[in-house]
Image (cartoon, rainbow, N blue to C red; front, side, top):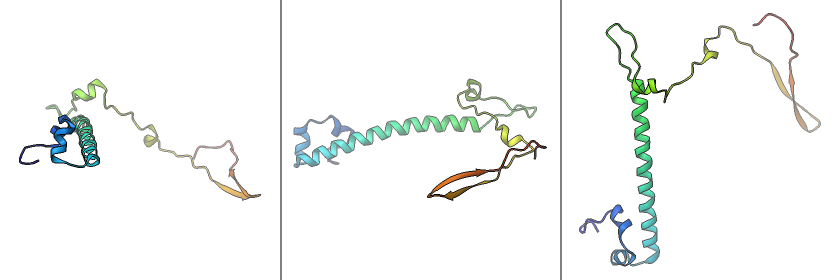
Length: 121
């Protein structure tokens, strides 16, 4: 097959009689055609993944203006890959609640602390 320059793309276009010259067993021919079609579908997925990777890379490589200000890339300005700001990370105070799972009568139930009005901790 290498001598005749037959690769997976050509196999998909060949008729069953043409494939029979190279692969005598019918089941093997079906398996080869199925394998070749799956590989083609994976190449389509790889193309999509490459485009997404390029967009992410364009977003990461941000150009700077001469004054040190950040200039928006075309991907950012279009809003395709924009992320929301994590407001929880900015908070200076946290609220922690203590509780446990209690096992009683062949079942678990949740025990939580009572809500008391008081200063935020």
